Length: 110
Image 1 (cartoon, rainbow, N blue to C red):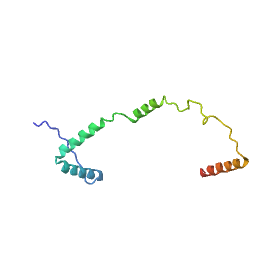
Image 2 (image 1 turned 180 degrees about the vertical axis):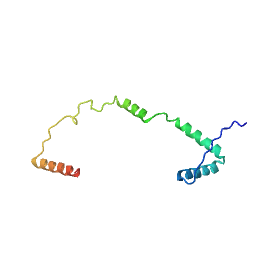
Image 3 (image 1 turned 120 degrees about the vertical axis):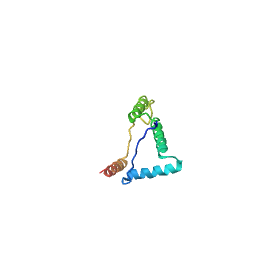
Image 4 (image 1 turned 90 degrees about the horizontal axis):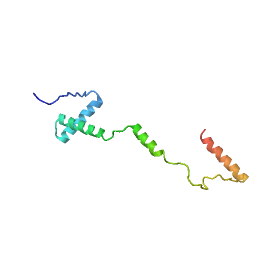
């Protein structure tokens, strides 16, 4: 009695996805010069080995990013002239131009 385990796989040539897959398998079989059984075993082995390389989920990635960003300060630590409030004095003409520019920019947003 044979110790091999059989699985039958059927590809329906009327279904485009399955027909494309069958064509691809035939091409690979010719390139590798092996049986369909051997080819499918190789494909499954490669697929299963790759899936073990990334055993993390999207939530795992989010957790790591949150942990890393938790201790990062986004506020300036030293006082800087860039962050200190200062009074800007505009001439009346500059103020009108500034107002006109702001209104034009706001009109772009509807």
